[in-house]
Image 1 (cartoon, rainbow, N blue to C red):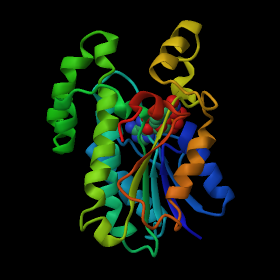
Image 2 (image 1 turned 45 degrees about the vertical axis):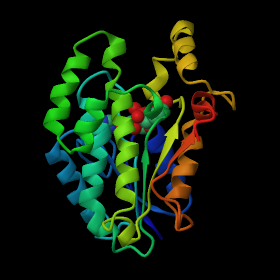
Image 3 (image 1 turned 135 degrees about the vertical axis):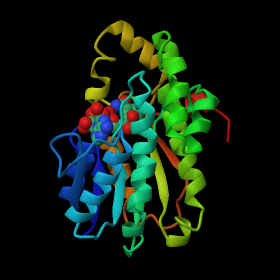
Image 4 (image 1 turned 90 degrees about the vertical axis):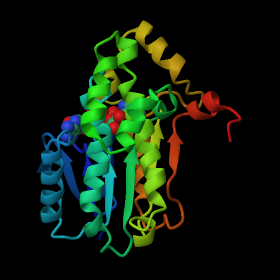
Length: 258
Ligand code: NAI
């Protein structure tokens, strides 16, 4: 039996992943703000430390995979703290425990938004590991109109996918036999997008920026199945990848950029 730590397990993609994992016989340690085995706030350094310590304790010191789903899409600086540091710092804290597994795996939820325009100064501050600087720089965007403020979300996901790519080939991760991958969904039908898709006008806006010619908006299970495959022992040589599971949005938007 594999023990899998899943953040954001109380809702949406994380909840679907936790359910599928349990159905396939895994032992799941859920981490979330509520309704979880470990109640912790991943937006703060203390919360991340607490989440890691309690997850290791709940797992009796044996963790085979971490699936990081927790995230928000709000046009506020905190989005950087949760979506980037809430993944990266938690993974770093869990790495020594993971490294003891016979088949350790890490998968995070990025987004097709990682391909959208994102301010380089935000992405750089995140990758430099400077949370204070990232939050300070974010204010300049989030204090403006909605569209400008939204930039923190693509920045958080771009930086996350890039961190995974950089870290994946280092001694710390590849050297310890731990693949690091991400799944990048398109528009998923979860509480996060409910309001966005509520009116015809807002839905048209979403569909224009996230075109999904294959099967249109996706259920959280479509993401969960891929997350669990990448978290399984079958994933032996895939690392540093962000796999787009997005109804074709990446293929439409990036076209021949390969
Ligand atoms: P959701 O809102 O249904 O679930 C997110 C979960 O994360 C919630 O249970 C929430 O309590 C938890 N969470 C939020 N802040 C937290 C914090 N500070 N500490 C601990 N837990 C926290 O959202 P959904 O749609 O399931 O999103 C999951 C991930 O998928 C996010 O990273 C999101 O950015 C990403 N994503 C979602 C897409 C969508 O269309 N819904 C598209 C692409 C990516």
